[in-house]
Image 1 (cartoon, rainbow over the protein chains, first blue to last red):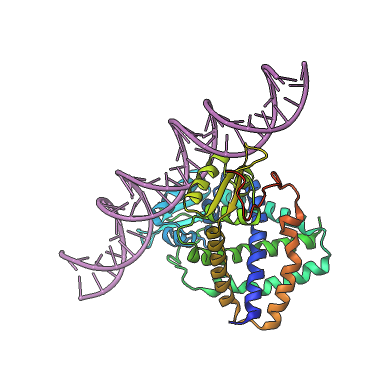
Image 2 (tube, each protein chain N blue to C red):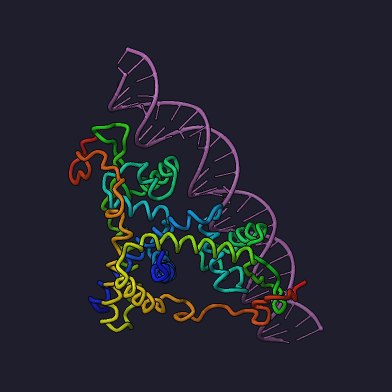
Length: 167
Length: 167
DNA sequence: ATGAAATATTTAGAAATGGTAATAATTGCA
DNA sequence: TGCAATTATTACCATTTCTAAATATTTCAT
């Protein structure tokens, strides 16, 4: 293990944790009444439309039963749409409702605005180079790149933007 | 608000959230038996020795009563030292015990090693520029720099490395 | 000094969250 | 067909967290 690499990891850890704290503050301001697991669940469903319950649970770090009830709550608040899969009726198909999508968007927007507020006094060129450096690091953490264990499940009615074949 | 700045904020948010997930995974691996709020509490106490209960609670996002009990647990496990403030006896002075400090260090070390593992296949120059960019970004989120609202409280026995005036 | 208001924390009881084990429904393979 | 495996849910219990109220201490205005 390289000394240089460790130094970078140390720095990365520190800044990421600090930045995440700031993000959390912004999130709390915007995500009224949403707990962290609820928020993360919505985010995952948004990124993986049509995902199943247990893959969601695994990603968020909850058990399937807990996630089942968490989704109960989200469905009751009309933030996610839960319907049975036509092909495999054991499965559940999860998607954000328009309201859920809108909520996530507004929360994210508030977070972005909060961050931008902190960033604004920075000289633009520095910002640009900093973000570039970070972006190069990004594939390291992007699960779409690093891991391939996502369950595609029911590709047939993965999204179903307009119709609901599940009666 | 600049369009460019917003774009940067968007990018930054994405990378930070992704990276934080990776960090969380590494943390979970190392922080055996510590919940996230417990972990965050220990981290805050470590960074703000001698802090009071409610400022800690506010930072972590818990109420004072909840934090009181959480600290009960940490004190019972000899991870934090809770003693009354000499000057203002309403207050409580929180510090990490040597064991608490050591635990945090080892957890952090494990996280760093895990991150370094991901970083290792990266070319050294990129790492170097990333470190530079990160260190430039850091003051934006560093509470020691950006904010001054921390309660210094009892400056007298803030740290008390060797003696315990509060019998 | 004395009493009222303010501050910091703890206690008590209710509500929510999360886990394990058991259950139900469905699929796929022998 | 029958049986093991998969996916989700229900039942039950432990823990966490919140709200409200109580306690202790300090500060401030008489």
